[in-house]
Amino acid sequence: QVQLVESGGGLVQPGESLTLSCAASGFAFENLLMSWWRQAPEKEREFVASIRTPGGQTPYANSVKGRFTISRDNAKNTVYLQMNNLAPEDTAVYYCKGMLGGTIYWGKGTLVTVSS
Image 1 (cartoon, one colour):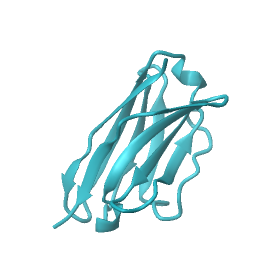
Image 2: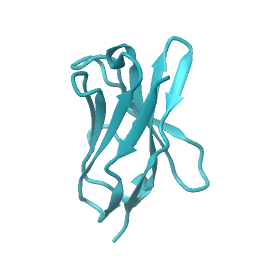
Image 3: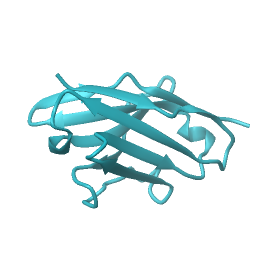
């Protein structure tokens, strides 16, 4: 059973940066396709970014392209989301998702609030 635990959320001002982490346990992390998703209040959960292998392709949502960077460290079983130039519309609960074959695993999320 894979467990995913996000951390690093918090309250920041517009223009500031934040790095989220997602620590995985319970399975061979390097086999997981990892991604970040977010859900703003009263909105559906949306894709942010994904990564399969370190240094591999990293698709991003258009809304975060150029500002967010996803990365992973297989030695630490952790995936990261570096978020720069944050804006109020980035306010959401950010979720980590792992996928292996047809099985999907979700973390419980970490709240990011961007407000002046």
